[in-house]
Length: 454
Image (cartoon, rainbow, N blue to C red; front, side, top):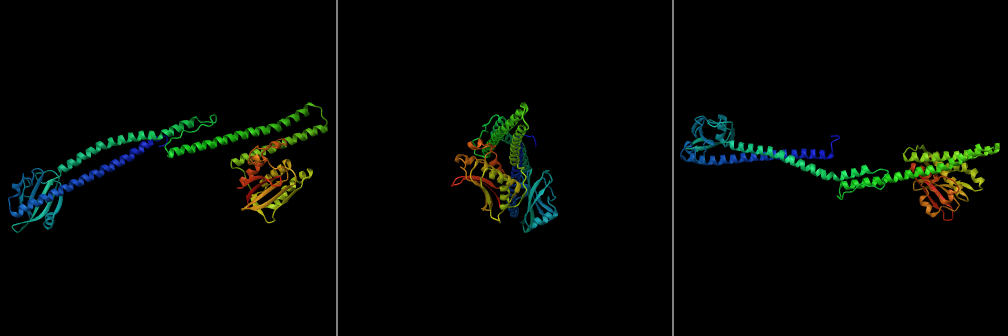
């Protein structure tokens, strides 16, 4: 049924179900009518057998004489009185041959017997008979009363014809009603489809119309609108990400271009050229770090950030990070220390976690003040890796945005940086199934940490 509109499929399904219901109902009614007519005929035969049996037992008149009375109607009913295999009395035009076979007569002599005959002499029609034992003048006889089934068959045929005419008409009307009702039920879906076809990135804020039906269609519309909200939010974040990335890339590129143009336009000494190359290399390094950070975030959002998880000793990890930044701390005359329980281990990608801690230490040395401390502790089945400094801490309003991309406090903008360091920390922590957070210390300074599985 691929490509067939839902409205037609619903109508076809309704038509099939209705056809089955009508067919089952017709068969049931037909069988009930047939059973009712058969029961009524048997009751009539019983009454006629009782009345004729009383006449035979009293020796009043004969069956031939009763033909045409209310008990025997010529052309429709008949009676026959049999002794053994000999016909004692019969209504015309049965003649002198028993209508039942010898075995049936023997059974009827013992008790009432019902039988259906295809035809009898003089009546070329199917009939129903009742044979019952009677006595006359001390003799055991069998009284046979019968009635043709023509009237019942005609009634059944007429009823069948009416069903064959009324059934298709009812099916057609039900199908048309189903088609109409399906159209009404699907009208909100068509309205949502039309609106969805008009929604694009150029029409932000557009949403699907919601039918006030309080049913599955309304819930579907609500769910789709919530999906559009998420998609629009994701699109907005991606646009902001591209715009911020472009802005951050433009600055080092502009500086690099300026340094190279100055070096080309002026007669510089070897020492000046080396200085220009040194500054250019620093700008290239900054561009490379920024590109790596952007690539890491993009791969993480696609779920493609590879991790080589292994058991890592916490004190060794902190010591490795501290060694890499010791020279900067010494140059700035700032103490750099680390502490961790000797038996504390975590499951993580060592290189990624070192990268995250490196970003935290770099921020502490670049934007913080005082001593820098790396410490690890076990909390609720996780290992928290903290980097603390004794500077002025974060602006309170900035804390809730600290881990967003390209977010920087105003004073940090003057010291360079793309505002991706903490975002990278959170990305690495979440890739490990952990989290990242920041707070200001009560005695001054900042505490930034990431939590990973123990």
